[in-house]
Image (cartoon, rainbow over all chains, first blue to last red):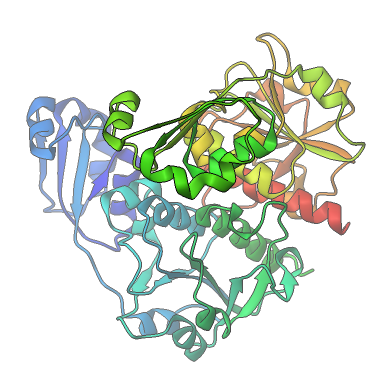
Length: 237
Length: 237
């Protein structure tokens, strides 16, 4: 479910999840002509008064722009295999908060991550709020969800990815990390963090902090890590 | 207004804003004995049933822990003058969203920033939600608000601070920035960003991004910048 102009633009432009239909407040139709012109032929565009739209949606939707896309699930192994020889994957374990999920996708897009791999305990990146917080990045970045029982680190290793994970006792400070050509950055839920068993099979990286390990939000942490990986790839240390 | 155990602990431990009183759901009193023992003598601690507490607060407050602190305003010039010779200040212009404000304070605490300086267009870091999102950092980090008409960059320069500001056309990529001993990092509201006039009097720094300049949330941006400043201070490039 895409809300607002920017997200609708990304849904239409990415083409990853086909647009099924668009619902607009009448006052919005004219201003969206350029976006609507990029929709594939045959996609129905419905217009309604703001009052009718609010009644359909169930709350006052001030943006006045909604679209339904069709979920296109990806196979995890096929997704990883198709990535370039040098690529960055974001791996997520048990991220259950849609704000954090959206924030992580937003950062993944900002720093050019190639794909996101989720375990079965993550919330849905295509939930309405996650899409909105991601500013549409959840609709543009390829992602796949591992079936329950499958292992993130093992799946990544099978595709030639070294997985880095944050730990207060990490071997190397993030700022000094030289990433492997295929690097996956693993993030777990705030509070409990990553399971020790998962951490043990990764390259551990620390972020030196004044306030202890739980003092960063996981979306912010993803921004810090992905900024470093992008910078380190551009200009090796 | 402090909510929850962690924030109450920080309010009491920081001592920056004196605790005026504490209101607890009866079921919480026993588990908080250690925190209450650290309150100054004479601070009243009220206990009430959850129902009475909900009625006082106006919504179901599941944490069952509230405290009132007294705001202790700081003079901006005095605050800056008292900082160490090498220090990091976070400067905020027109940050109007309490989630972002809380997130920025959280990151400032995580990376050991020495103080926060706000202009008159910022929202209140001591608003209940900002405190909660900051995980109490808004109560521990010294901050001061400039009176309207005073200039952030000029005030900082007067105290010997070089101010860095992000711009897509910045002279140096953040990852390569060697900070001055006294460095202030300036962040503005998302969307409009910083006023050009303000930017012109700063050292401009860029964060190379795949998705364009508006693709990072301002709280995440502060985490990325403060992580770099902390790392660069520990180990000069």
